[in-house]
Image (cartoon, rainbow, N blue to C red):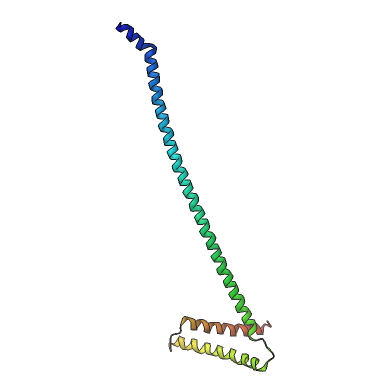
Length: 154
């Protein structure tokens, strides 16, 4: 009887049990592999999403900086154009003697004032503020540029 049971178990029943057990272990491993693959895929997707969000943020910042640079360049251009137009109008005659006399007197007076102020500041007689220095240099630039342009017929 024991021999019959062992023959039965050693034959097809044992193979069936071993096959089912092996299939169960394989399915369990496949399931664990699939869960791990999904977890890694989700991490990769999250990392890709974070990179995309960062790229969009950087592009937006660069767009804002581009706009700021363009605005600053436009202001510089407008400032240069305005100064050039002012230089052109300094020596223009209006036809009114009082105004033309004032313009003829004030331009050299302001230039002289600028030279005196800059000379006194240079020798240390007083400390010139940044704004005063800017006004002095602008007045000299306007006067000297006006004279240069007048000599060239502009």
